Length: 383
Length: 204
Image (cartoon, rainbow over all chains, first blue to last red; front, side, top):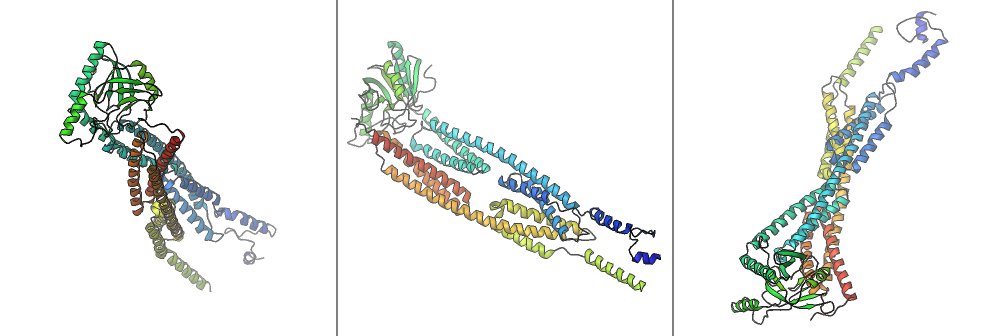
């Protein structure tokens, strides 16, 4: 067989050599070529599993809002995934012999790593946001409680309570966001709430400053000093009520025996001037009667001698000047009684204590015990 | 015969080089993908379907980067860019659709929450009206009335948020108002029950 015929018969297909090949070897060589050529041409399968892994990681990351919580990493992961998928599709369309998934494999591996990183970072950021929101909301809740306790020293007409209710609505918004996994929104709501609380605290401080600078401050100071002096001289306990602090102090001379929190009249922090104003009077009084359980609707009670001479004089002056309408009485039945401890002012002018506190107080006092009620005890009055 | 074959081969090679080398950027595909992106933006997909929109946006960015890379080559091939543009177009359409659906759902939820809050406030107001006024309860009732007035104000703010399409805020505010109003009703009803159970003689 001449070389040309051999070539036409397919005996020689590799290289430029024209060495003769035996007819038995030829089919084996062809088989070898069929088996080894595709891998040499880079014809491995498409990296679908890796791509599916990357897509799954991206889906997981979307459950925790990856693109908003870790935007740079997640954007890079999405870009890598898109490029890998595009490359696979490009190669899928190529002919069997020219198909090459090696770049697709590299891109898919990158997409998988990026997607996993996106998911991980998004979860870390989500958890951090969750802790921050939780702390912020708990802080706000605590602040509301503390400020509410402070606000009870302020008359309701100052609008403080209304402001605090608005803060509670904001807190509710934050809690709602938190429950729906919107931790950043929850933290933002808590931030708004903090600002509202700061505004309320400033209002309270303004009120207290105004109150502390009251022209009645000198009178309150004198009453307290006289009461303590009488107590020291007679060696008997006396009661001081600080309306601003909502506090009842049992004193023996300058020594404080004990103190209790009290609720006052709904009429605000102003002194009582007439019946129906529901304010707690300010003045120097005495216990006129001790009522035990069953003798009063309010557990136990210390009846006071309101109105005293000073109250009557002030009332007459107010009526003369037209500040008290005609037909309006001066009021009465002012007492220190139980069923208090509500954390808000609810009486019609009385001073209310928790029942346990009344049990503690009543045995320590008697008919005739001095009770001095002041707007506030000026700082430094009690040594 | 041999010479003619070579000429044919050379011509075919030249045509292929010209065809591949002078391939143009897939402007129609770019325009189509961009149009879908614009639709997604119009549907506020950035905020209402953030994940889907980011996927579309990144595919578009990758396509543009691929086109830029191919533009600088002598042998240009825009196959991959076309694939990326197709993905960007598809994802943008999905983002637009998801945005419309998510926004609509949140709008409905906010609308329902506002209605529920309004009902809760009305219920609390009605409950307060029939609450027995005593020395004990008078202060509470006054304070609760104040609270309900504040809640009405907060509900108005929720309505304003709704009008300005801030449905998430409207939903959260209205839900909070409803919870607070419901707690007031519960307190009043509890007090009524207590009073009914422990009727005490009036103080002289």
